[in-house]
Length: 111
Image (cartoon, rainbow, N blue to C red; front, side):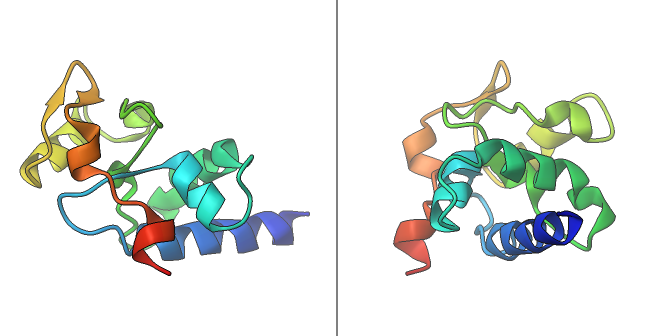
């Protein structure tokens, strides 16, 4: 089973690496792209473990409403928000404003 999870995590990372600067996607959008629509939580687990990997832009993956639900996995109080704001993404109260402006859908962009 661990091998299956590792393989899934690697597939998640391959998608996450393609999220453009200044854009975000959701756990569910990545899961759906990978053909595992009900596995958004597994995508979240992959993002939580991504600090062990090289340059995975985990800060660009948020929940479906644009909330920075993974922020407590980043060093520093507001690092996830700061990284997004440095890319021009507007975040207020841990939520991306005008999510549709920044949203990157891997199904549309990678196929």
